[in-house]
Image: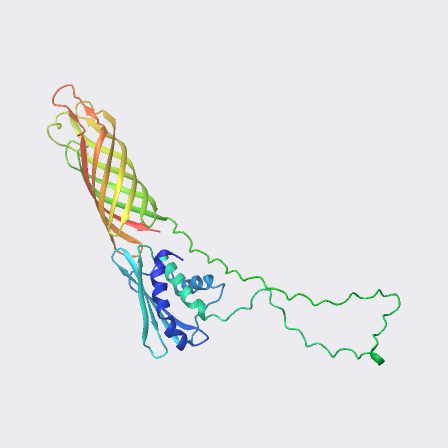
Length: 345
């Protein structure tokens, strides 16, 4: 059982002594509700399948059960919250517990494991392995011979050995079947795009665009990010260059905690500028290492908005030296502020 599901199972088991006196032998009714923003969560048949898989394929929920188990899934901020309420046949609340997870599939798995642990005592007992089958009662013993003599054996049949009492068969102890663990949380595809303002790479503040593609787990993500800066034209370089633009790619591993995330950045790219005097385009490389901090706000079950800030140390700085006038180079430290939309699949 998942550790996150243990408090729920313990809470429900506290209600079990009262429940055993009231529950009908044929099970309990289940109601399952998903609130706004949880359209991508698992549906009720999937929850029932999770519970049945923990109970050897038996679905303990019936439509006419004396008990009522109510499961409600809601979206609150970046996380999904689930609540289980247990009611007796008269509608009195016997137990209530809540769970939460940033991924709704994990939350439903935890709820299913907890419900299966609670419903297990109410399943019909199974026959113990090794028990003897029901046999018809033995017939009456044969009549003894006159005078108390034993009946002779048939000709050609060897005499029978004296009958010994067969040992009483000992049934092997039943071993509980191991409970299958919930499947591990697999990565989801994340795709995003946004706008940014950057400084320290070009001669002045540049407007740019970025695109993101990667994999997202519950607490970790790994993405490749492409960034392009629009050409800028700033003093004192206007006399010898028409515009400076940038194009770069970054490897971005991130850690996530609720609404917040932090990332490392490894960036490599190039700067392009066109000389005003010759019309010649030059491409010069640059590279940097840095970090990112940001805020992620969920907009729906599959869409989130991100606001982030980057700070990078430019380990390979581009230098532009004209034949006349003032030269220019990439700053030692560059910054960027970005706003993105990210979709999860």
